[in-house]
Image 1 (tube, helix red, strand yellow):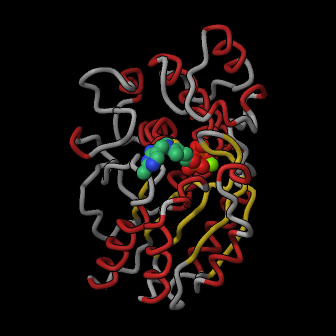
Image 2 (cartoon, protein in one colour):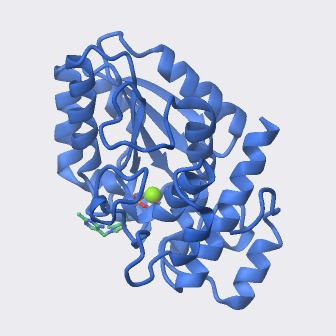
Length: 277
Ligand SMILES: Cc1ncc(C[n+]2csc(CCOP(=O)(O)OP(=O)(O)O)c2C)c(N)n1
Ligand SMILES: [Mg+2]
């Protein structure tokens, strides 16, 4: 557990340094999801950093809220998909690390373009059904922002998944109660998300997404619930900007880069554990 927590600290440093280096990007949601990504790629998923697009006999992850690409790129690099030095090219011209992930750049670990919100669950369903047809006993994971649930396509996918008994899919909702223009409650109140997923026929779990032990335990529990005829959703409580005190719980850090002074303040709060890129 201590090792995972220390990896997550480095991922958070990478996020801050990448967004500062590009002077643009999305630190808030990225910081909030750093523990989830670390647990997934360093403990939960069966995956191979010698990347192949088809992911045959591997677990597979789809990021639907593509704007939090910094946490995805850092995790992939730290897990060995590509050289950590490439993180310094984030959002630069001709970089493989574009602001929103795309397959065009052929960055190892990226299997779909995302950033146009609402589409990732549909893609994850396709992959999950394919794996079932192929007789694989692997799991498909997906991550979605809570603000992203304003997109109608997600609810079509939620219905489809239950109807077609896609029970090898674990979709996590980053329930940070923040989105681009303010709180979820102010922009579009979802009410009780967990009860909604249950009403749509999913098995649901809930966790503190910023408590590594809980994240690992809940993801393990979710994996053990696959194969029971129902898709699985995890309501993940996170804090936008987690780990950097002046960014926490503030939607203004959804998509703004820290200046030099803010960078120094942030890095002072995040121990360098694996070595900066
Ligand atoms: C289809 C679509 N509509 C609107 C946007 C603009 N947009 C980017 S992020 C965002 C808010 C998303 O909220 P959430 O998923 O909760 O992200 P968080 O702020 O928590 O990181 C919006 C509306 C988009 N990227 N795609
Ligand atoms: Mg949100």
